[in-house]
Length: 295
Image (cartoon, rainbow, N blue to C red; front, side, top):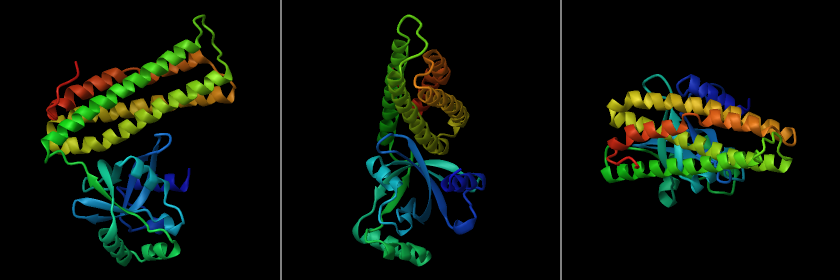
């Protein structure tokens, strides 16, 4: 387990509190989409509360380069933030990341440096201007038109995943060669590996963002809590199935080929009930956003 993974595990198990060099520091955990792969990347960060938004600082401990998470959120500003709560456990929140500029950035970085002098040292160690990023949590209570846009975007994401899933299925079926061939070439295995991982990463990122959005749904639409609880549990089941699928893919690469029939069986297990999951989510969430279900 890496240093980051240990910090994140401790953070999640202790309602946002960790020991060691970060003991007593206000911390969040943020998940961004990898700008090249789309894979979810999760990192701990120090934050400063500023009204209804949360400020994070791309200090990278004063290193010459911006941290990867900063480049990721610039490319895709949908960021899932996890933070300790009064309820006694960490909760995820969907946020929109905005990079601050000019006087606002300078004023808030100076404030953070006054609170935590280490940040002044980080800036002195590097010639780059350390970015300050404001995370704005999703609020479903203020703008009905924006809520409708969120609902329409949910349909778009589901349909994109459905299309990708159909393409993965077609690729696996084609690999069976119509005659029951059980062992593909190494090149074909690599192609399937890339295609399947693209789908897996996209679905993982979609569910990570949804878990954050669900917190806003629970706050605004309390009657949806039972449905959202079910959806969160289904996300865990799908995640476990995707992990098993990735294991099969990795074994196939290591064996310079692999067993396509096994891959197809694991893929079927991974997506079993996924369409039902999408339909259930659309059935319960879209009406709350005043968006009709797709026909």
